[in-house]
Image 1 (spheres, rainbow, N blue to C red):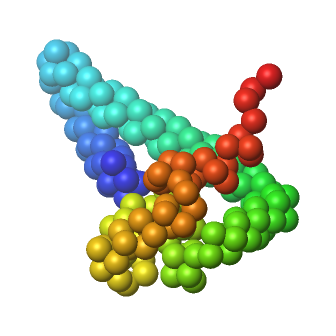
Image 2 (cartoon, rainbow, N blue to C red; image 1 turned 180 degrees about the vertical axis):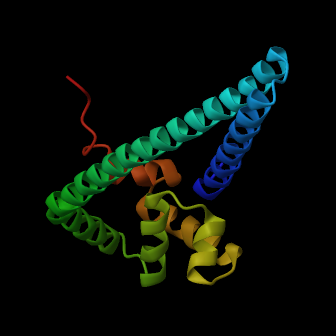
Length: 169
């Protein structure tokens, strides 16, 4: 339920309370039976309880939203900090990978495909990204594996990444 809906329901319940209290006062002065006054009083009380829970829920949601926004901002700040601090290393890694791909004598297109394979893209995704046929991408991937002496995508990724991911001590 959004804030506007909560506000509308709260106003309606408050109107019910006001109309019921006005009717109670009128009934009381006219000497209406006590059970009738008690029932109408219960209606007013239930409407007030409904207002209370709607308002409590609204404040709880706002508090929760503020907390989540704070957490999100903190995580974004951590992510930005990590990117900034690791940028130099990532650029070095990228240059090292590029150098190895040159040693394997890959064409520029094959190098693009190799980088995307290392990043984990599927052949279909690479073809769409590069605006080529999937068959062309598959042929280029096969050529990459042949020129590198590797058997597939997992060995290609492992060739560059295994030394970066040291086992936990």
